[in-house]
Structures are given as C-alpha cells and as structure tokens.
Length: 87
Image 1 (cartoon, helix red, strand yellow):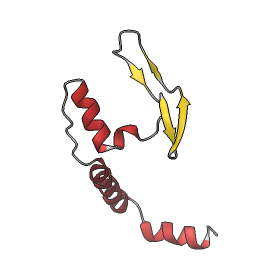
Image 2 (cartoon, rainbow, N blue to C red):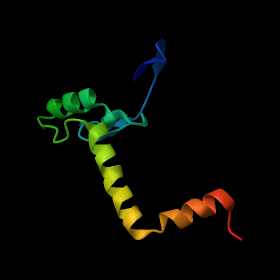
Image 3 (cartoon, helix red, strand yellow):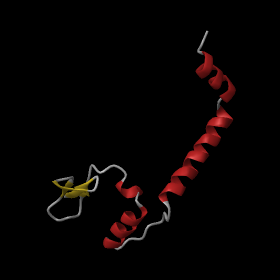
C-alpha cells in the first residue's frame, strides 16, 4: 500500500502478494536500490545483504562495462560519427 507520494498523503494499492506471503512483487522502481530498505527487508526474511552500498556497486559495474567498451570499440571514430554524422 502506498501511503504517501511526493510528501503528500496517498492511499493506493501496489503490487501483489500470494496468500501464503511467500511471493510478492511491486512496481515501485528502484525499491531494492535503497540500502536501508534492502537491508531491513532481507533481515525480515532472515537473510543478510551482501551489498553494503548499491550505488557504489552499480558505479563499479558501469566502470567495468566502460573498460570493456573502450578496449573493444574505436571510441574516437564513434565520437566523430556522433559529432559530424556518417558521410
């Protein structure tokens, strides 16, 4: 249940949960990116988070992807195509 949106009261249903409570889902984008929520939720199901800072982990993954792209692509040619187009 969504109880507030943009600091204003709300009363909107969200997501789904099975009758036994074992399966649930939500449309709230980025919910598990919130370190505090993720840790609290995992603790509620007797699990522990292996990621202490999601933002840092995501940035590190993007850095690894950038390294692969830089070593695999001709970045200066791509910059030229973006700047001047293909002739």
